[in-house]
Length: 189
Image (cartoon, rainbow, N blue to C red; front, side, top):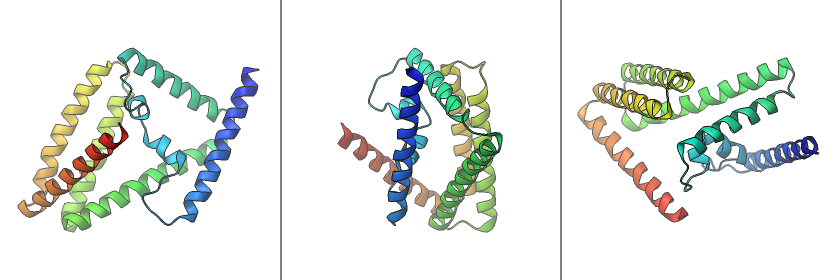
């Protein structure tokens, strides 16, 4: 009975996802996200359960359940389909990152050398973060501290790439984003 229910929910989810993607492709609004994109954007249970005060034990449980569910979904794929899935995931991520970096280059007026250093810094930062995430020896608190260290060192290096005018533009942009995030958070309460 449970298997039947899980299969039904899985196929219903696929149907909703395909409908959402079709609907998304019809709209030209770049800010609209499909249901799948919204779920994929929530990398952590804390993001998915915004506004719910989760204990660290609950976070660990949710992450384990999330991982088990994802692995269960992947079991229905053939090895070729898994490779395709992973390739598509990598392509999507690379495309998103490239678009973000192009936007920053344009907004800040980065030179080619600056843009290259910015990209290298970003790639190194993502690698460091992924290594921290993958390290099972770290507790949640250790991971938070390591993330903070990476963020702080990245921030220093990032600012060293920019000239004074570009720093002002970046600070104004970040302030605007914080205000948008705060207003969004306040409107959802």
